[in-house]
Length: 140
Length: 181
Image (tube, rainbow over all chains, first blue to last red; front, side):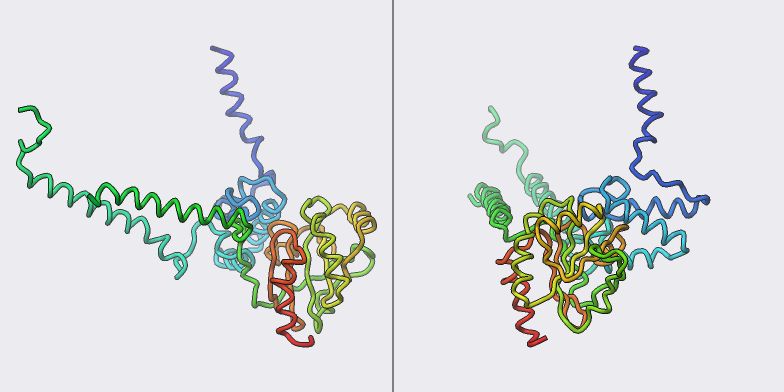
């Protein structure tokens, strides 16, 4: 039991050492918060299913360096976004903008909801109209 | 009756859609990892980098203006680059376009040895040691190949190993359409 506890505690205290981003934090919390937000918002285009914050590949660390430098230089969020999308396209953003190409992507959850609610209402209305003891399978 | 067949029909339609996509991937007609470059139709990013073959000299993108060039991003650490190398040599031998290499985050000695043993298809090789030029070109995985027009516009991009077939299909038509440039 105590061995397990030791393992859990060790896993908790050493997890910080497994962080991929080993750069020193910004001296002020505001810029660190912006940096953290951006590295989670940008996709590692090389590995494609991870944010640059979570990827150990060289390109991800180069892009983290880019974000760090832009924030240190006092550049705005819009400037960072423009820099990245001019080079890598909207795919680099985990929050794709609403454009003609992405209307369907954004509308799909709403459309699915409408279809499902419509189907449910139809079934409920039909069932509620049926006489209660009309089920032919029901033993008399 | 339709209510029993509709789900099966929907299943078959979806299956056909997924099957078609899988077939396209298998036949090499669809690359789901490919990101269309936002640079196409825009000016090629400028760079001034040390030359790999002569580190005392600089490769300046401004000196490349006036002639189209094929910009090839490679590295000795990249297996696909080795696979496309013979195609690059063949393209260079045709003399229809000059090849400019970008050696991306590479070991200098190994890169020099690589070109010495396999042959050097490039008119110039720029050494991008810190990876900044690659970011400016939107590079995300070597090899990547760009065709830049004589007036410095990115005309085409290919991600992955280039072959003579890809050259003929994607790149050569641009050079013909552009006339004697």
